[in-house]
Structure formats: structure tokens, C-alpha cells
Amino acid sequence: TQLLEQSPQFLSIQEGENLTVYCNSSSVFSSLQWYRQEPGEGPVLLVTVVTGGEVKKLKRLTFQFGDARKDSSLHITAAQPGDTGLYLCAGEAMEYGNKLVFGAGTILRVKS
Amino acid sequence: NAGVTQTPKFQVLKTGQSMTLQCAQDMNHEYMSWYRQDPGMGLRLIHYSVGAGITDQGEVPNGYNVSRSTTEDFPLRLLSAAPSQTSVYFCASSYTGPRTDTQYFGPGTRLTVL
Image: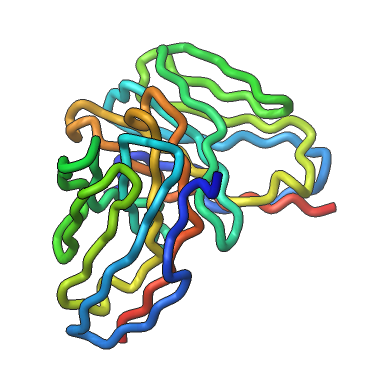
């Protein structure tokens, strides 16, 4: 059982569309991160959120941490082919010794 | 800066063989960690280190050993490889832990155990 459940697992959309990726858990996280990974490379950190209800924006990407710190979402506005990749959420939870755990990821494909 | 480097990039082993995956960073980071990535499972923490001489187990430590004799290097040893260890291995580093600091990942080592 995955501690962090990501949905959807796979998303294929047209350029210009909006999308949201979700990261959910029954556990409370002290922090949550989003990474993007391209084939053959390591993940690259996009954002870290630490406060319940926190919203962070990175150009066309909006990240939200749930009020109860059990879930997070990543919203992309007007997706572009360059957004294609694997999006991973990861977090630290006290019940898991504050060690970083990852979700299984969402594969995003943006077609031009 | 070269960042986080990993060698080799690809490796094929036979069951029972041993090998060491190398990881080095030139950013003077105290925190280093090893993950394995398997399809449909995201990344799982194997071992981590908060500084030279200090290591601790992650989520899936069995079958792997680590040591941290210098700040720069954090090798991962497989003493007797098993097919279940076929995976892509990533090393990462940061000044402090991932919660408070950006964690930088290496390019990965793709390991196949026959």
C-alpha cells in the first residue's frame, strides 16, 4: 500500500488544456514536495510546502497543501509540451520517522 | 560544480555477485541518501546519512550497505545481488534534510541482476 496515493496515474492532454494532479494520504505530513522527472534523469524539485492551506505558484504551476496537511494538488494552466514528464509528490510524516516517502507518480503527456 | 555524480550509469550482474554503486557530490552537502525507483512504486529510501561517519536505514535497507567516510562520497554496496534488486538507483544530496533544503538528485544507475 502506497503511503501517498497519486492520481491520475497517467494523463494525456492537448497543448493549452488545464490539468490537476492529486496527492492524498491518511497520514499527516510535516512537509510535502513536488518533483518533476524526465526519462533517464533524476527528479528535480519544483516546490516544498510546509503549512496547512499553503498555496505556492511557479509560473503556470500552482501547488496547494491541504488544511489538514494530508493532501496536496498540482494544477497546471495552459499546459505545454515541455511540461511532459513524471510528476512525483513526496513527504515527511512523523509516523514514518520523518523519512521522505514518495508517491508512485503521475505520467503527464502534453501533445502539440 | 559537477553536482551529484553517479557511476556506473548501467550495470548487469549475475545473482550472488557483489558491487558498489558510487555517488559523489561537490556541493559540501551534509545530507546524502540513496533511493531505488521501480515501475509503479515511485522512489523508496534505502539508506541516508546526515554527515560523515553517520548513516541510518531508510524504508528498504535489506541487502544494501553504506558508509560515509567523507562528506563528498556515499557509496552503496550490494554484497550478494538478487534479481529483486533490479532497479534504477538514485543518489541525492542537500545541505540539511529534504524538508528544509533542496535535494539534488544524480542521473541514476540502471542495475539489472540476472
